[in-house]
Image (cartoon, rainbow, N blue to C red):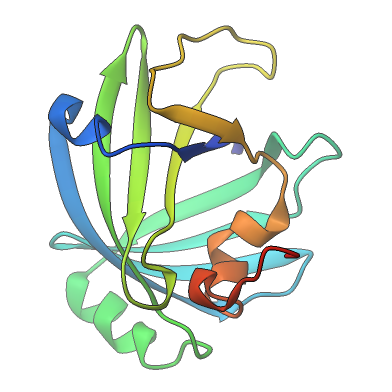
Amino acid sequence: MHEIERKFLVTSEAFKNEAHKRTHIVQGFLNTHPERTVRVRVQGSDGFITIKGKSNKSGLSRFEWEKQISLAEAEELLHLCEPGIIEKTRYEISSGDHTFEVDDFMGENKGLIIAEIELGSENEPFSKPDWLGKEVTGDVKYYNSNLSKNPFKTWTNEN
């Protein structure tokens, strides 16, 4: 129930040519407390509720529990979420034995593209595609729960 994940900024849209799957995602947060978040997500025609704990010191690992719920339940729960619904298109790209999930954000976060890779251990090696940029693992401003409250379009160079 722990996820180990690294996050990177994406430097170009070249990843779209490598994607084998594309899914529209709408998500909101019932709770964005720093110690835990509770997320509701509509991903394609599926609904999910997810609870995530606080990240460890490296930002690579944290508790995650996810349960699939009906699409109707997820759509209803989205109405109870805190302000700041996230909308994005997720692209899945195979890279060796791994899959990168690249989120191309819309709305208030348009212009932000983040790639994530889940690993079996914090030190697991993986190949880095050419379009992978600066690592932002553990930088809380890139967490979706923070993007819902402090969207990318409001950032300045000082943020």
